[in-house]
Length: 148
Image 1 (spheres, rainbow, N blue to C red):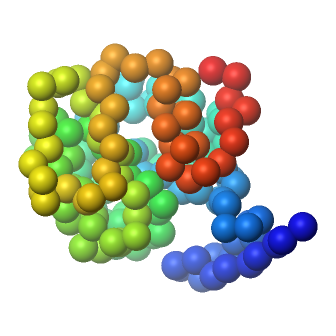
Image 2 (tube, rainbow, N blue to C red):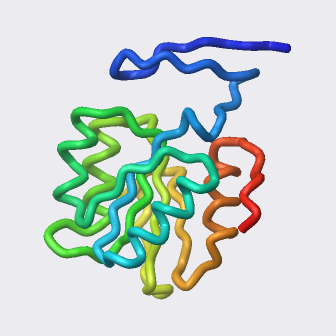
């Protein structure tokens, strides 16, 4: 068994196996302005083992990005005050190694090349929770035992 221990930003220590993270180590910052969708997504991701902090707008996410370490920014694209694309751009400056996934109800929304982090994923609403969890699992190379 190849076990590794690494120091994460903020002084947290995480143990993993062969470069793969476990779900309990992975922290997700969810920015979604729709209350029911935000609660639904946060609860579903937490049930499958992820640690989730959820906010209702991009401007509420920025202070958290500056004070805490997150592995994934999961953000709606269309939000008041600051859209998800601007949030992702600012997040990329604050935490360049953090991954980004956009969720949007506007399938026609296209992301301009260079406007978002290069590895950003887009998931169009409506989507099944299983698809969201599988995509997050894939991003972090963790197995899914979600049962969703």
